[in-house]
Length: 278
Length: 279
Image 1: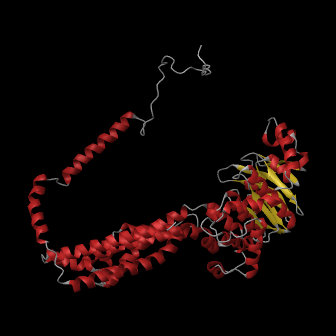
Image 2 (image 1 turned 90 degrees about the vertical axis):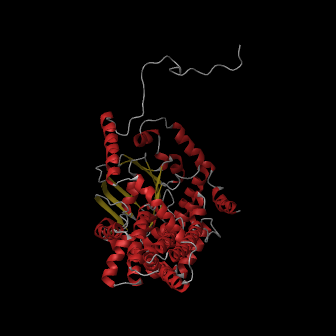
Image 3 (image 1 turned 180 degrees about the vertical axis):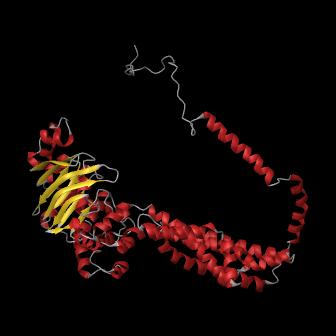
């Protein structure tokens, strides 16, 4: 369970990215954060695992206050937060397996890390996750030899092998084409349910958010201006988040996509990965 | 009339009469007086400097016959004292290989310390300080210092090359570490990995090809330098080369030079091949 209280971030440049955000997330809810560029989405998610140091406010994960922790304590808690990035942030020159296993770095000794001698349990987990995300047989490929969608699948496996309590997902599909974006988003949403994991997902694409969200939060200029069910998102709320525009097309699209796409994507994902191998 | 309809006119049609509104690329130094002033001062200094170094064509012409005699005396190269040549070259080679190995290993922690993005401030200043000092002095100066301190022989030479290697590899590697993709670092830190594991999984994989390339390149440099620093008594073939000049044994000098050239060419070729293979 994640609790964020009155989070404020002021960057050294003097720009205030977050003006006191408060949020609570339970169960295995998939929460999408939408908002324009520069609205503080990325800062918000990074303040939770303190890749960005919040200026004020508290973050609690299962009752532990993350914001007060020293370095060692913070590292320990970071193990419980799996993060997925916009640019995948795989270590390009390492193999897929090494990238996935790097999710266990918080648990193994330095010697194990340098010799790549991870516990058998972790290796079993890694193979199982690679199968699940549709990358069977890819363990010895180098990360920079993969396509965008495949890289993000590795990124997802790396986050999940941590056995996290929460997923922090920062714009996971911004660098991907629309079809791949959908299959990646579906995979994240499914895994969140399978592992009973709550997830916070930043995203630009409103219709994609509506298709997969249990709940949507709208950020505008560092403030939460909307928090509710995806079907409550309408022209008025979108105007409050992004500013005045003709939103009728965006919302209509979301409804269509939601109906169409639910069944066939999970099947295409592994086939898609296998196709690139040939 | 014509088949194709005319394209829609631009808001202001191109090719209208000149309005007198001109444009020029802004100069690098905007003030014209200042710009020409700087050029004038530079030109004046160049003339003054050429006077100071006594650029004397007559003297150059007079020296040419002597240079010719000198070159003629070098032929044919004298390989008769091959054992002296062999031990000297071998010593140079050993100095180069050994000092490159030690120097490269030492330069890894120095490079990490000298990279702003991974090292804390005090360590950074310390390592940058070391790099600047070791790079300020040319190898020959460092060699003179070590020969004074530790006496003649390859030991001083090896120390010299180690110091110089840490400065060179350390600086280049540090700059490469500063240029790494921070996203990969962020991702590894987000898993709860500490500083040392972050280095292992996010930094080293990114800079490894560069490190290998630098080490091979430094071996190449050390091989050449090891022949030079012999002149001030730091071991290797350089000493024999210098002595042969002093004794007017120019044919032996040429033999040594040919061996050095061959060695450097082989090293350069090998380093080229190795660096090409690293991706």
